Structure formats: C-alpha cells, structure tokens
Length: 134
Ligand code: CO
Image 1 (cartoon, protein in one colour):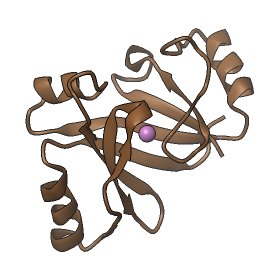
Image 2 (cartoon, helix red, strand yellow; image 1 turned 90 degrees about the horizontal axis):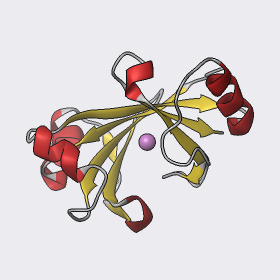
Image 3 (tube, rainbow, N blue to C red; image 1 turned 180 degrees about the vertical axis):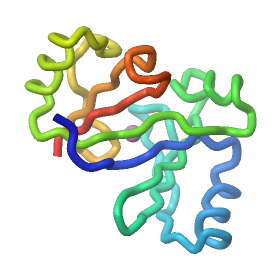
Image 4 (spheres, rainbow, N blue to C red; image 1 turned 60 degrees about the vertical axis):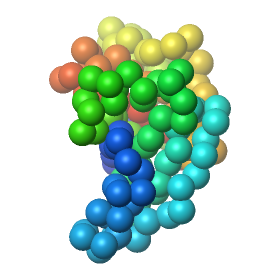
C-alpha cells in the first residue's frame, strides 16, 4: 500500500537554530519558515535528494505539537509520512486490518496541499504515521 517516504517531521524548540543546524552544519537546503495556522505550526522544509525533513514548531499553546514539546523539551521525531496513491482506499484497507485512524477519519489537507490522514502510533510500533495521497 505505501509508497515512498514523503517526509520525517521533527518538533524543535527553536526553529531558527534548527534551520541553521540543517543548513550550516549538515549542509542541507532549507526553506524560509512557513506559518501554517490551520495546523498550528510553523514549518521549515529541508529538501533532501530522496525525501524531506519538516522542522515543526508550535504556533501557540493549542498547537498539536505544543504538548509534544512539553514532554520532549529538546525536541524529537514526531511522525513519518508515507505516500499512498488513493487515500480513501488506503483508509478502508487500514480499517479492515484493525488500524485506527486519528481524528474523525476524514482526510485533511496537509502541508503540501494534498489529503492526509494520521494513524494511531500504538498500531505502528509507537510511531505516529501520516499517509499522504500523491
Ligand atoms: Co507531516
């Protein structure tokens, strides 16, 4: 069902410092910060040859990543995103296999303007998984 790894998302306590680590220390190409108010995060996109890294920082205390940062003050890996061809077909197949879809189960438009769903980490080795239709 899943295709390519689309991105790995990392929550960071200091977006500017994280962007600098990726650009200066690791020599990667990074975007300017992009505010995504509907997702409650500011994101810096790191472009790699074979995938992307998304550095996430909460926009406010209600942000879904604010609690993560409280529990992990140094930041850490938040989720990984796999590509799927048909998100509704993928969702039905996942539900049939007993996997839990987070939220109301309806795809939302993700950071790349494509429909996404999140899967319960307890069903996938303790890792929050995002699937994105490409
Ligand atoms: Co993501």
